Length: 265
Image 1 (spheres, rainbow, N blue to C red):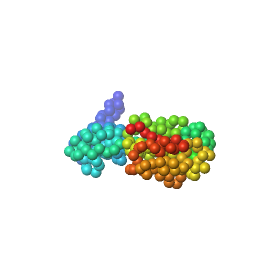
Image 2 (image 1 turned 135 degrees about the vertical axis):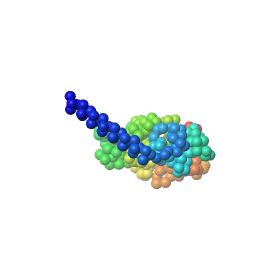
Image 3 (image 1 turned 90 degrees about the vertical axis):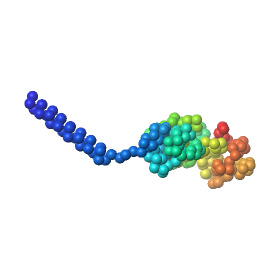
Image 4 (image 1 turned 135 degrees about the horizontal axis):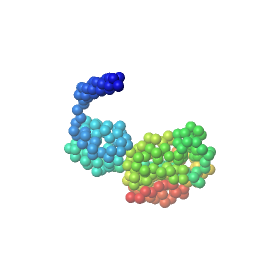
């Protein structure tokens, strides 16, 4: 009984000593936080998605208060959050154009010829290690095993028939899908951009026709039809200059492969 009481006494003393040391350390190493930083942090969306380019919402809030970051970088919060942050900082609110993810690949199952039947882990990087650049004969194609889907916190990415597709109504443009894609297929484009070729294959047209029934063949019909000279065929692939594109859709109308995507306004 005496041993038990002595043990409890020792533990109590040790607890008091360590508690006192922790309290002392918290005072010695205390770093005062600008009240504005806490207010900015509270105004943010809280997704910690990294779309602002900083390590989470805390990192971005600190950068804003230090004057190292603009008020409109919280992509998850959008214009409303930017306005709140600008009001806290007493700054003007210049709205940044919203960006959304886009996957320039149309090589779905039954359209793009498979290279091999992959049965390993549901991971794009693992499939690349197993069989090279792609699980499809088109080495530029989306692997379609969902790394981007798992990275997206907003349910904006889905695999449809073996190809990643973006739900633009849910996408906040954080770029997590861009960062996680081992083939660097996914990219961010302005939400206002209406025209994008859904292919990235740079092989010659005759080769493309052998393994994908919808891949760009570099026929240049889109280039000749564009009144704004915004679409050019470079390295056998149609590519859009977003600064010139007027979104008329004429290129999509003449494309024989029907792979030029025309987004709704």
